[in-house]
Image (cartoon, rainbow, N blue to C red; front, side, top):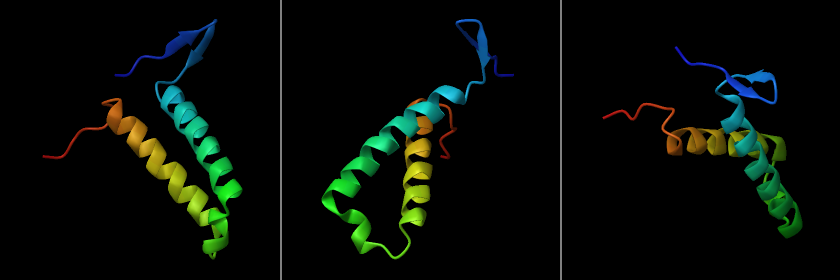
Length: 71
């Protein structure tokens, strides 16, 4: 069973840190996409945002060893 983490008296679920890390990287990439006009090439930019965040969260969880590797 996964234990909760204590941060300054607050109990955080184990998934909170990877979610916040992926959110930070997503916000940086989104700012770059807006600056360079990447959203101009997509019909639904919101779908790009959702897919990008999902892939970033998956990558953070895989690099952190939280997901089992199928083999």
